[in-house]
Each structure stands twice: as C-alpha cells, then as structure tokens.
Length: 121
Image 1: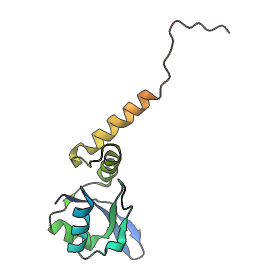
Image 2: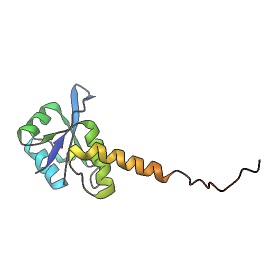
Image 3: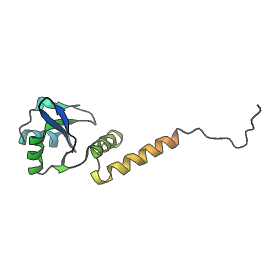
Image 4: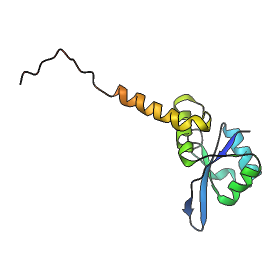
C-alpha cells in the first residue's frame, strides 16, 4: 500500500490538518479506515485530487502504519502529475517533473518569430 501524508499545517477549528493521498482510492480508503477516518471525509472523489484532510494525530497513526511522509509541494506536484498521466509518480521526482511540465507548457505558449519578417512601421 502506497499512501502519502504531507507536512501541510492548516488550522481547522482547534485541529491542525494535513493531506493524505494514495496511488489508488482503494489504498486511500483502506488507510483511512485503519486510522479511524470516516469515508464521508473523502474529498474530490473520482478525480486526480482525491484525498483526505486528516488531523495530525491521524497523520501520526498513518505513518505508524507505513504512510510515507512528503512535503505539501510534493503533494501538489504529484496530484498534477496524476491529472496529466494517471499516476502520482515517485515523490522524489515530483517537483522536477512539475517544473519540466511548466517549462514545456511555457515553451509551447511562445509565438514563433519570423526572422524574415520586416517591420514596415
């Protein structure tokens, strides 16, 4: 089971929350059940952004059960990769993958320059 928990710290009332993502929703739901998080808290079901927001105590329980700790930047890059490719990919490659995608996208948005065109102004 490949489940990831990030280092985000977002206040939600008196709780502090982070994200939990997984390679598959089955893995995600299995971990949620194992750490006592109700299925109704599943967010963005059926999308590349499928995840749970979990309290830090649940994060610790997930890590004890084998969840891999990642950064919130890796979470964002991994979900972007899943949106583009269908796979989260390895966390240690996520940020570089996203930077390469952004560079490719930026390159594609540049209008070609006709070096033979003369300005008639």
